[in-house]
Length: 472
Image 1 (cartoon, one colour):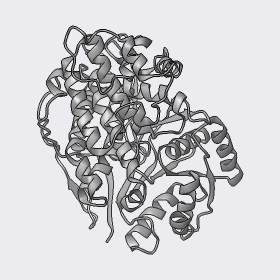
Image 2: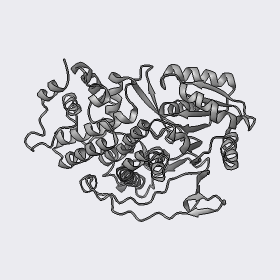
Image 3: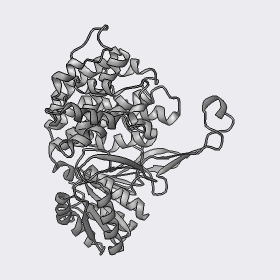
Image 4: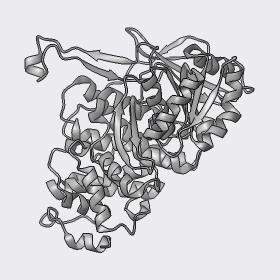
């Protein structure tokens, strides 16, 4: 049985779902349960009421929102000048999701929807994938595309989305005279395909094979060294032209990838609530509220989803990690994407390489961020949230310590390297509402599972703790 959903935006009516019979089902938004207030009033709440979600999808050409501040209100509501223009890349031009869409022989709906959607974008696709997913695409995707008389070439990005891989893929695309790029795989494949497409000014299709990140959705690519160390990110001009989410394909990935995706997605709330929870911009308010909804979905459904792969609740969690997490970054911009948790991830890549998955390091980074709030600010809510997350992590298998990331024998010098990278001048960690120094960050990194402390000792940076946790 094929389940196929294609989302677009109907002007003046908002989000809709194209039903199987072709009719539009309008979905009015539910009222927001509570106004945006302080993080203290929101983040520790254990009453996880999750309103129904409306993901923003749109026709090609509607992938961006351009906001021009009203000159009559600029002086009172914004520090921007009347001529300021803000551009948001909110969503892919089209999203197709469902079960059993890719195998060509399964159903006529899939054979018509997926290949023709790709053929509309180009006739000479270059498929970009990792070594494993390249063989997977040969088995599943290529027969479908060849049935549409498309001239196909394929290339691997190698170990990472790095400068050497990007250069090699640009050459491969030019040699093939590619007119569309198709990324197949995990987050690194998505990032590589999107960035190559932008550099060559070509449309891009993303087909995730795991739910480990929202990279298939976002207008952002991370670039790493060949050894896996984070170097920089690139804000792309638009989200992908087409995103194809096949649940059967996602289910073939190791469960560890979905667990990591949960860790990456849940960070949206803990980062956005710190950096943007106080802002009054309408879309940022919406993004922060959606981040809370995302957190609630994951708290409520992750454990059951992991126990029942392929079930309805499993699909809902996949949608949350791949799609809804991307919506939040699109609506809220960079502030609603990353703060300290991702900065810690970036630092760890310089001492761990490919030893752990992106979302695993980000999940650990959330604990570090909360620990910083405890130590620097004496924030009791952060302390409570950290203890809540530790239980959640234990239930689903997310890392709680450096040891869980395979860094149990990290040296003090290596830890300092990671901290210095995380604290680089352009790091997202500086979106925290307080200044952090290297010693504080290092202490937080080695005390993520610390018990609740008394008020007198919480602000102290303990060299004794660091000496017990790391080796000289």
